Length: 246
Image (cartoon, rainbow, N blue to C red; front, side, top):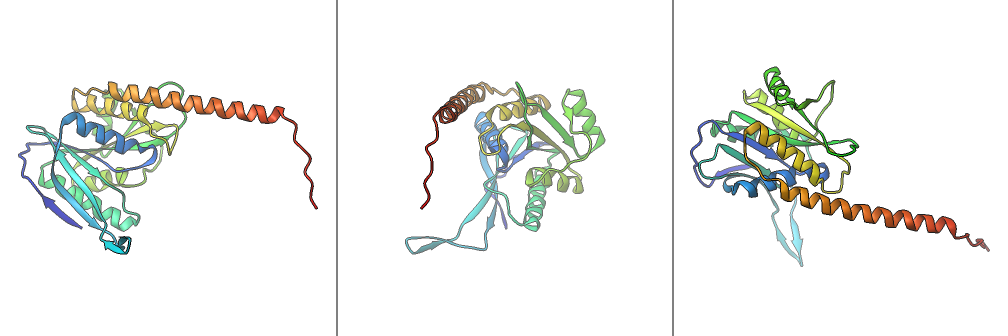
């Protein structure tokens, strides 16, 4: 696992927003959209090698997973975008430590992450917040963000990084967005997450494009479900032919 700084941007006390692929593609959709909106450029990366090779037509290659850091000019926001999450818990912890070290070098004051919260909702998805300190929980309440009450856990780097950051003295907030489907892009949930983050960072962020994409995706899902239910109803009406076994 190697750390590379390609540029040396100047920061005061920036915020970091970090995300890796997860359920409903929520985190990756959100961070990629935010990166485009901010016009952020690459300035550092963590390169991670695997204990395997790939090959095509007999020619081998060494696969690399990159965890890239972006920022825009005169910005106090750093984005950490990961290609994939490690499968081994120990590797995930080491990577979280490495990301937190980059945060320390950039004098990051607080890290934000996103995570999916599988839960059926009616109209609009809710966003819940959990944080590394009681003071930050108070901040979430002040911003009318519902708190993740009781006991629970967040799998993967989108949760683990907040815990590691706490150990290193960096504040952390994880925003949990309700999702309906695990394997379908949750665009409406991404919009809810980004709107919540924009409020916390006092950032002007246009999420109208996500709204339009969400409406088109939901319409396609609705048509497919109607077609499926229509096919099932037709099959029930048609009498079944007897089966012959010899």
